[in-house]
Image (cartoon, rainbow, N blue to C red):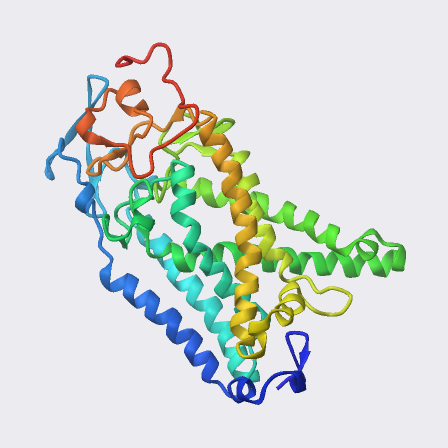
Length: 392
């Protein structure tokens, strides 16, 4: 085992804590808690519209009406959809879940194995668990961003928890491990690229190279350049495959007004803060320590629970950037900027999320086919267009 634990020498850690640190019991406990939570989510999860089933559409319906015009209904993934699946393939919902569950398991498995071999927690294991912990903020993101998810996903049943009910439709279970993939992979790519560029700059210019003189600023710039296109592409792909959608969104938009509309400015700028926060946790200062390793020993809990303290510090660090993201999204929502609706509502068998009644007024959806959702409060509500056929 390393002679240093998160910036502290072994001599500074109580003997009782060392018994856990020198063994592997702490790792079994960590994965046991994570596994128990995942198991609880999986065994209680359901698929389909469930409590949010659309009462105006029969399960065997073949068409629906939008602005007085009849459109065909497509049956796949166990539900009714307004649009054909992208490229005619109905496996997108299963692919997304495979990426979340499989990718999260691979990352945790890899760093868990390295921690098991070294008998000490790999720094990236704490970061990975903390990234998954951002799942706690997800219903707030979905609520602020008018961000329903596909009811075909395994999700927490509506009515189970006030926390998950805040989501416009449902809270998917695979989002928990997907956060690990979505935050850790870009962070590793950006950090790896930064190290290569920094080494190249030093080889050419020595200590006068910009990245050598300003390593942290350089990491932020590189991380920005890496995470913006990755996040934009990821969300765009999610929207066109209808894994999730922005029912209402602020401009500028890609394919604005369609079901697959995606933000090419605000969403990447805001959620990217969380990705960048994860990336900065990989940075080693002049003392050779990461942010987590530097700050965790300063907390009183470190003496008895060093690894849990490192996780908590990492979770708070990423969480602060997530809160900044949510504040920005709240500013857009509460000032009425989210006025462009995605048409048609794709999940026909599920009640449409319509807190501002734009679907009712713009697309003439019946009131019983829409819902305001939980915590429907706002500042300035977006207005329907002047020529909305059912405006009142």
